[in-house]
Every structure is written in structure tokens, then in C-alpha cells.
Length: 356
Figure 1: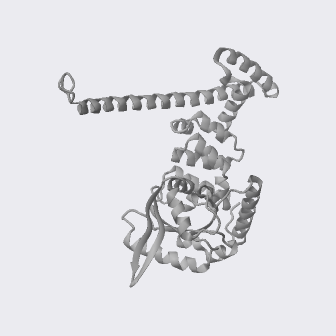
Figure 2: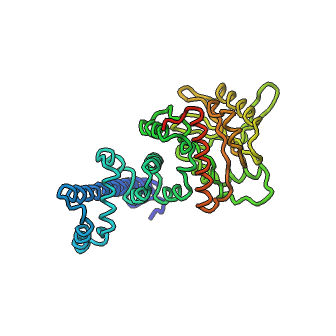
Figure 3: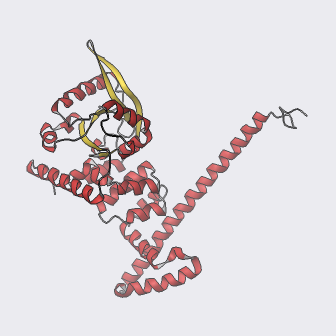
């Protein structure tokens, strides 16, 4: 017997290739089945919510609807299990109310599970729910990732949350249209939460950069969807001088290079001049045909909002944001962010930029 060959003369390597081919086919088929089952489940729950809601309304039984739902839940649970409890039936009714467009829901149900929608239904503010919905579907977040983003107050930390609602809705419309010219504001935050770095006291900028690279996957996740790492300490030459870019990444949807400069100190006006030089160099030597101008994110330990506002950095594709190395208590974080949003909207109103 020859150990190198199978009994029919086929090499073991060929056997493995055949096995891997069939295994891949089975795995793909299973994934498709799971996706189809999930989509059917989501649409079924939506239909159940619609039937209950419309029946109660058309028959003028809304005033005692809870009793009807409870009796219906009891019968359904006996036949089909706890998934049809009174609480879940009420959730399905709310699901129908919050996602009333069946055509849009059909598209979303191919990307999101019922568990995703359960998390989204917990959000009372429509604009917040819409932002998480779009980012979650676009980034194919897991339920755990979605829950983590909500718990870390991603909406409140997104730059757009500091703008009038009309502008946020416009950005969401652009994102839904998959527009390459979508404003970077939808993908920017302030502050960025870098609690996963676990840095000790008296660390240097080099320590910060090295730790970011060591935890690169988590750092990219905090930045958001569609970011891809390109280089660290990228050396460029301008005249007779050498300069080094801290981090260079790329955003696929925006079709832009993104420069990240890490600063241990507070933001200073001269930081703008530094990154403007880098942006002009990137635009001249690195920007590819079909791409949009590069942008810069200056990550600082702190930033004076008035200084940033007066410098009007956004028009120069420069975004200044703080980084936090630990998440404060949720009520403290909410108070901080609420204050920042109120101040930013007040400044917009003084400039005549608030359409609300």
C-alpha cells in the first residue's frame, strides 16, 4: 500500500482539495439557509405586528387591546412557545409602527436579524434609531457590536449629533444613496473612546502610537466602518525636510485618505498648519484618480471648543477631537455630551446656520 496515494490513485493533496471544495459549498449553503430563515422570521414578526395593530384600530378595540393581546399570546404560546408572549407581541406591534415601509424592511431584513431590531426598538428617539440602523446595516455589525456602540453613546459622540436635525437627515439620505461625496461628518466622532488601550500614567506620544497599533483592530472599530489601515510614521519629504505622519488610513465609502495625528497635549492652533502641510502633500502625491481630497483627524487630550469653532477647521478638511482613555459614568458622559451639543447648536444659531 502506498501511503502517498489513495486507493484509486488520487493523491492525498487532491483528496484534501476535493474535501475543501465540498466543505465550502456546504458552508455557503448553510449560510444562505440561515439568512433566508432570518429574513422570513423578521418579516413574519412584522406581519404579525401589522395584523394585530390594524385589527385593533379598524375594530375600535384599542382601548382594551392589552387584554386581547394577552389572550392571543396565551393561545399562541401554547401552540408555538414563549416567542409569542404578550411582551413579544407588543414588541412586534411596535416593530410594525416604527418600520412601516415593508419594501425598506425587506431590504434591511437581509442584513439584520430580529435581535438587531429588538435592540433598535429600545431607542425612543427616531433620529438616533435611524442613524444606528443605517450604520449597523452598512457595517454588518453583530448584535454585540450594536449594543456596544449604543452603550458607548456613539450617536452622541458622532460629529453630526452636534448639528441641526435637518443636516443629520440629509447625511443619512446621502449614506442611503451610497454617495461617494457623503460628508465625512457622519463618520467622525468627538470624543473618541480609547479605553481599550489600558495606558498607565506618564506615557509618551510614542507609547500612545505603539499601543494604538498593538490594538489596531479595536482602534479601527472605534473609528467606524469602512476604515482600512495603510501606514504608520509615513515619511514624506518637503523641500529638504523630512516629516512623519503618525497614522494613515483609508475610508472606502468616502474614497478618501485619512490622516490621524496623535497629540498628548491640548489642541493648539499651530497643529492646523502642521496637518495642512501633510494634507497638501497627500493630495498632490498620494490621492488617486476618482478619490476625494484627504482629511485629517487631530486626536488631542483636550480641545477648547471656542478655539476650534473660530478656526473653522472643517472647511479645510481638518477635524479636531478629544480622546478619552476611560469611559466616565454614563450619567456624567451624557451630561458632558449634552452640554457640548447645546453649545454647538447655539453657536450655529448665532451664525444663522440652524434650520430648526
